[in-house]
Image (cartoon, rainbow, N blue to C red):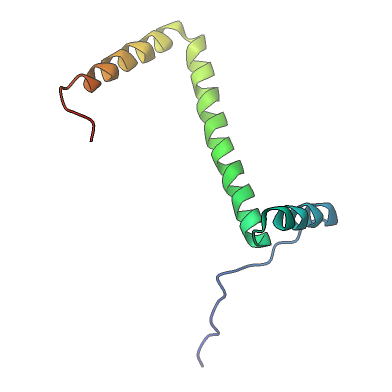
Length: 88
């Protein structure tokens, strides 16, 4: 017996306030509700990546040797732009 095809979509339970906010945003933007949810999740994912990076740099700044090494490495990377090649 063949398995039924699986939908690319899924159902997620949210409270009424959240579904209301999703619906209002969809109406205001003209985007489908599932796109509103996808955009919100992607924004949160990116925010968490940046927050993690910021926390890592903040911790590094507390270690003066590590921070000095970071700045030296950055200076080294800055010289790679002086390679004589034009921007393409």
